[in-house]
Length: 525
Image 1 (cartoon, rainbow, N blue to C red):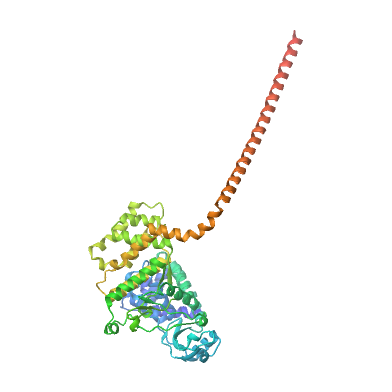
Image 2: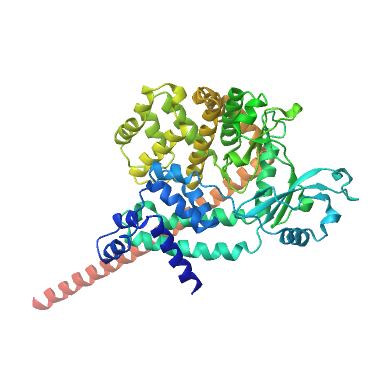
């Protein structure tokens, strides 16, 4: 009954914001279109469709808001006006009570707040649909005396969030099935696959230990960086529902007036941001995939002035070596206007069927890419290029991997932030050296040397055993050959015996026939 009531509320909200006419226009012919036409009579909403969709999701609550945020990353499926509007969704909800927050932290840590923290700020500094964050100061323990006085941030999972998420996800799965059946675009939009992808993301965010592990790995990669800082995790105080990390002091990258007043060099900041992202993608194959202004701070501390600070690692992307190779070579081929190479890379990487005609795909890629070269390189968006390549691939019956659409979404975010800081940024000039270095390290002589170094321990174990393995292989081969020879010899002997029997029988038959004929002839004469 509760699910039915929630479904009715969703329908009413969609009607209130004038979404039902949009649904009606995309329905398959039949009674459903007729029924929705009646329901849409009294919904005169003249706002743009993207804004109406955003307002509807905001009215339906934080889980639907987060779904809209994830949906905004699927620019390969949605029109630009809808994707742009969904990207504006802000996941801000009222905080839960101080008493609940304290109780959750004490339950997870197994100690009273006062035993763990010298100071604990009960008022959260940030609150979202899944968790909220408090500031505090650590108290030293006999095992950790160095903790004394360290400022930390405590992230707490929202109480009772799992049943709410499960109920709304069940509704989303049901709605996705309905949309796929009744909408003319249902199969192309893949609503069930999109909801399933969102389901995975959301459940990953419910495990704060996963977020802590993601942050720890990125911190290890950039521990010596003079461009990016990642908070340290206090693993003794981390649990699935509560994590404690180093407090990072900075100003949101979206507050440009304050940063400018502080003397931050925006041109350097923009170039550093692009370099950080491409280093994550091509050097480590592991990147922060939720890089909106709320998760990016800029340090103003004298010894760390102008450095990036990354927060919130619930969503990260991971790329395989083949993914990185595909992307790097595609970008380089694109900027060299080598469209045939782009087409060949699509086929070699398996993103299009092996029997695809290179010339046909080359022509499609050229029609997508060539218009970009009528403008300066600094105005070319790598994110848009990547999206267009994915869309071209989809025309050739290719299902793009989720990690690549996540990369494309993050790249668009990075480009948007970088160009907001420096409108004259030449993104290609910043990114090209990183791509060329990676390709040189992977495919050139450096790659060969590094590969040999990586495999050296394995070869060190295998080489001493090679003589024995070779001898055993030869012995087994010899036995196999001897066995085959014996089988052949037996076969030949059997065939010879059968032949002799046949010959003997034939001779006996012939002799008997001749003897009979002689006797008959004698009796006649």
